[in-house]
Amino acid sequence: MTDHPAPARTVLVTGANRGLGLKYCRQLVAEGWLVLAATRDPERAHDLQALAREYPQRVRLVQLDVVKESDVQALAEELRGVPLDMLINNAGTFGPEGWPGGMRYQSLAHMDYEIWRNILEVNLLAPFRLTVALAPSLRLASRAVVVMLSSDLGSIGNNRLGQSHAYRTSKAGLNMLTRSIANEWPDLITIAMAPGWCKTELGGEGAQIDPADSVRAQVRTFAALNPSHNGQFIDRFGATVAW
Image 1 (cartoon, rainbow, N blue to C red):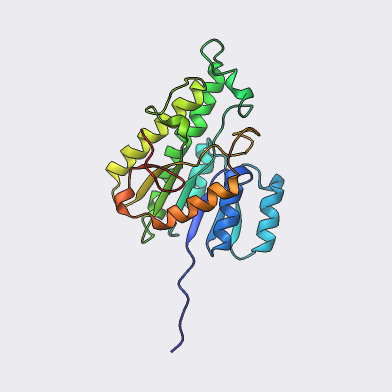
Image 2 (image 1 turned 60 degrees about the horizontal axis):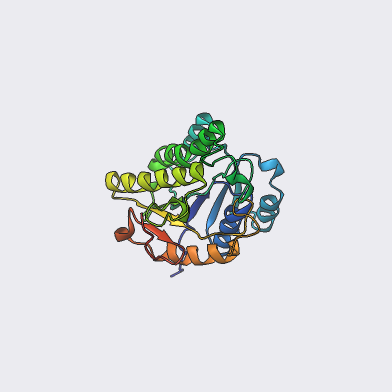
């Protein structure tokens, strides 16, 4: 009797062309996942293209602007009937600049309201839209996980500094959304993830954590998730973060 390998698990990563998104793609494909790497402009995503050449059967670049309803619905239609084991809502923004420069246009004295609206659109509305659209595919998987990329800056309980008001409010809202989805959809495992202050374009050079190290810890945590984690706000090691 011939043993047949289990079918590969499928993950969709948004904002896959750089930072944590690129690290998710690299590490998950190395672990045998089928990776749908979503980015606004696949033609310019040279690192993802190289990864797809290295793993031609297990990495597929997907054109997706998370704030465009038409892109989201087209992707949902394309994935109709396809089991999706994990959705990582990673795409996010601190505005035109990362930390610390981006703090200047979201302060009490100098709030740029247009930037704030865009931050909310990308960091809060887009994950909601995509998760709802892809729920049918998630429900075809035996153990579906939805990861909302939050931040320690989204914690109300841990806020001792203020500042970064636009970004903070977007992530605090994402945390509330995570809990609400978990309450309504107990058949999925939906979590808010605080990856730590990572040295990315968003986090800036002053950040303390290498993004590859953060993702390595997160991937171990993802593997250990079970239904009891549904609706939780956790860090990369699986520890609870204060709401």
